[in-house]
Image (cartoon, rainbow, N blue to C red; front, side, top):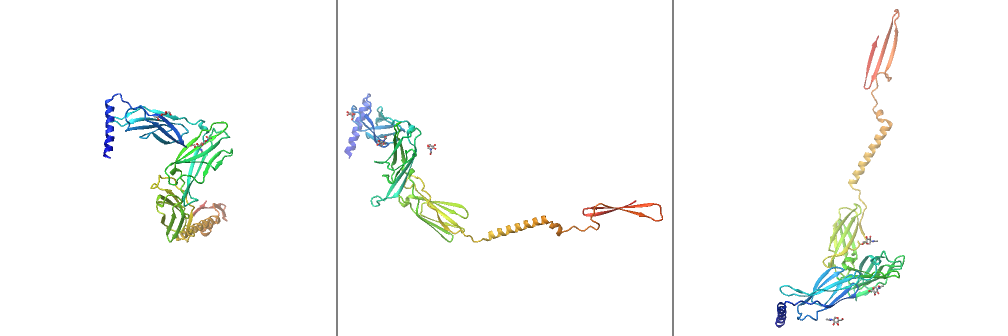
Length: 417
Ligand SMILES: *[C@@H]1O[C@H](CO)[C@@H](O)[C@H](O)[C@H]1NC(C)=O
Ligand SMILES: *[C@@H]1O[C@H](CO)[C@@H](O)[C@H](O)[C@H]1NC(C)=O
Ligand SMILES: *[C@@H]1O[C@H](CO)[C@@H](O)[C@H](O)[C@H]1NC(C)=O
């Protein structure tokens, strides 16, 4: 071991000594740089060290730069590199040799290679591709307890002729499969695909690659690639065997983990309790498989639970659907004193209202409390003229008596002429 370390050290030292002594020394670029498609959305970059490089290249490394479709760069000691990326926009990369030399590293010039984008107008490709995976119990539980189904849908490209047909493929790891169960649009073009079982691993961390190409007699159909992270398209199943029991004021809810290859500790849950009488929701988030809630009144409750694989086991993904609601409790109400009071008040108000209405209509008020009878006649502004003839006298006396009745009291005016 010590010998080996010494040897490597020695080689490095010799190389460095050579480089320092020879001012004209330069690192030559790799040769035979090729890009080869080795699978759906997968290429293998390979190159050879330059045979004209005189120096022993114990410390030689390579820097790889991906220029398209997405910029990236990394270093490697190997002379090949695998790259997973969409290929329908073409692919181009460069590589250079580097030597970690003291004090500054030596770099060769770059060599580049590219894959041309496949022919066809971008408008002929499919659009709006969405995929969903779901875990189901396997047909053969001894070999493999769970399997994963896949469903993808897309829309026909705007420029795709009517006779276009699309073909759907997925790749997971080294497995590639073509779709066998398509759904079609009215023009018989494939617009969705269903795989009841796939080679996708439930707990896998690799990306799912989807490739959709097509054919038409009128136009070249451009293929389309998309990469999916499994956690972002995995439709988790809802929890199983949910039970809810009310005991006094205690609502106890229990459930089991969903059908999934992930073990129990990988799940988090959300419980939704709906009070049907008061009409409000209560939502609780937890990692346990049971919940006890205090109910403060007699009511009917609907309980639903949903699940997600927590970040303990995988990047947080989608919530499952809510489970079917289960109902507990009884919404027949005991008449409470509160209600009785309200009803009583309402009845009272109503009775008063009716009474006052009748009063108005029948002038009952006036009848009940008639005005104080006037000491004189009811006729207002009565003028009484009386002529007196005094016998034995040639003169005539006229007496005018006038009554003026005013509200509340009466004034008697007597005028004697
Ligand atoms: C580069 O490729 C050519 C032709 O394919 C081959 O003859 C040559 O040996 C290769 N060079 C190296 C260093 O592998
Ligand atoms: C398709 O996707 C585009 C943008 O990604 C969006 O604007 C459009 O509404 C989608 N079409 C349908 C029918 O979903
Ligand atoms: C579509 O892609 C598959 C897989 O790469 C290939 O075998 C097939 O020939 C392609 N079909 C068309 C019409 O391009």
